[in-house]
Length: 324
Image 1 (cartoon, rainbow, N blue to C red):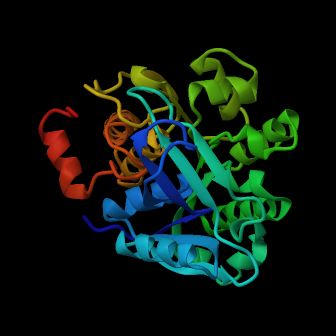
Image 2 (tube, rainbow, N blue to C red; image 1 turned 45 degrees about the vertical axis):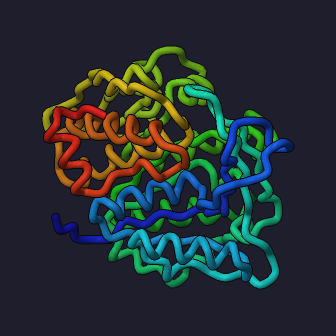
C-alpha cells in the first residue's frame, strides 16, 4: 500500500535494558538491550505498516545514540532530523521483567540528556510542506521548557502547512514540577490537535471529569475533531465528527488476550492502529478496531515495540477475525 506525504514524530528515544529474569533491578544481572520512547514506538509502528516516517530528536555522541539511529533506520524510519549532541549523553532506561499482567517497574536516567536540549532550532531544516501528519505526545513538553517550545513550534507549523495532528498525553507526572502545570500545558496542547488520544485515567486526571463521554466533550469543546479514549482491556471509546456523517459516539470492545506479558507500549500500539487507519481513510469504527487489535498484540511480548505488526502481519490478523 502506497502512502503520500510524510508522517513526522519527535521526542526522546532512549537505550533500554530489559531484565532477562523476574526480580528487582538490584538483583538482576543480565539485560537485553532495546530502544524505548512512546514517540519512537509510534514512529516504528507506522513505518512497519508502510508509511514514510521521519523522526526528529537529539542523541549523544555515544554508542547508545548510534544504537538508536541504527535501530530506527533498520525499521525504515528516516533519521535525517536527528542531531548528535557532543556535550550531552543519550538517555537510558532500565525495566524489570514483570509478573504476568503487572506493570513492570522502570527506572530512568534521562536528566540532562541530549534530547532534553531540543528546541525549535532543531526543526529549522524541516520542510513542513512535505508533512502529511504530525504525531505528538505529552512527554517532550515535560522534559524541559525548550522541548515545550519545540512542541508548540511543531504543532503550529504543521497546522499552518495543513497537516493533521494527533496528540497522546502520555502522562509522566514525575517529569513535571507540579500537577497543575502538567494539566494546563497538556490541555492547551490538546487544543492544537485534530485527534486526541488519552487513556481513561489520563483523561480523568487532566479534565477532572469522570466518564469517557464527558472527557471527550471536554476536548471537543477545545477544538479537537475527534477524541479517542483507551479503555484498557474493555476496548476504546470514540466521539467526534470524522467521516462526514456528523458527530457520532460509540465504544468498540477490546480484543481478548490469552496472556499479558508486558503492558508497556500497549497505548502506543493502539495509537499506531488508529492513526494508520484514519490516514488510510477508514472509518472511525474501523480505526478503533485496528487500534484495539494492535494494542492487544503489544501486550503479548516483552519490549515496548516488539509486538507492533508489519503490514503483512496486520492483514493476516484481520483475515483471521482480529484474533490475537
